[in-house]
Image 1: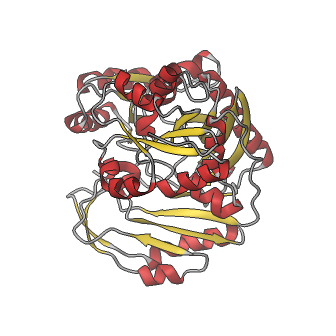
Image 2 (image 1 turned 60 degrees about the horizontal axis):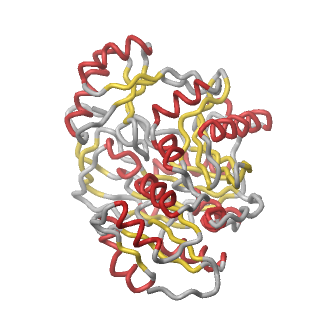
Length: 424
């Protein structure tokens, strides 16, 4: 049984996600919360960390339990709030919170809206927020009809998923059919592929050196939405793999306000009432357009805001789950970044990592975190999980960040084995 420390009881459904165990524990102490983790040992991530978790946290193990049994196990710990930082556990957390009568987390219906990209598109269209054409396909035979309905070029993406996993561009029905066959060959049974209109970026909105999209972090408290920050992005690596993020952004004030207003309207259309929400927005010649809304803290945001402004967005999320408002938004004095070292799309294995000392010597690099070893298999379909490592640092301004990113390819020169056709 648990023992109360006098503060509120808070459960975190834990798995691989935006916040690690140490960050969650630190934020819980700052909130004065009595913390426990809800875990499922069938997760490879949880199984790997389990010895350390056992020694540090009170654990509620729901491995193999039915939904009703899991709810009873969590209820026995008398939580005042429940949340998750893992995309993989959003649905489970919504069901548990509903079963326990905890209303400061997404309801099951809201969770469905936040995890189903097709539902999002339909809700946005119904609210007059976004008109991106989107057609679901359950087998390769339906792709040609979907492409004709949407109109090429198109983007193919899984109906559910995260981290740019298996997202591809197709410029014709024939190319889309080939990519769809590849997707369905390895996708789990019942998977659905979305065929969407390709949103053409406007590079000038953020500046020619930077990505043509941004993300927005919003704290929602009882339906009241408050902007935390807009995060700038590096240019994407083919096909749609993220290079990383930085704060503050480089948008003009008018564009930034349009981005904020669009994110606010999208969150409202999905009915989100509480929590930190991560919204991705494309910058197009016709103005900002919604890519997707995620019902949890963004993947790189925890580190960026902590190093960039001393702001703990994990603490903000915990407070919201307990029914308290988030702290005031962060303010930035320097430019803080995370930069992913991403292999070419056609690379199939890592032969040699070279240039790490040269990377460490670049101005503005505080940490080089490369854990990939020779022989590691690579596959672009894994999205963000395919990266070789990351750079972390701070620079005085965006001009210095531009010089740094231009110098990285010269400094870091790993070698790979490739498929016969690069990018295939």
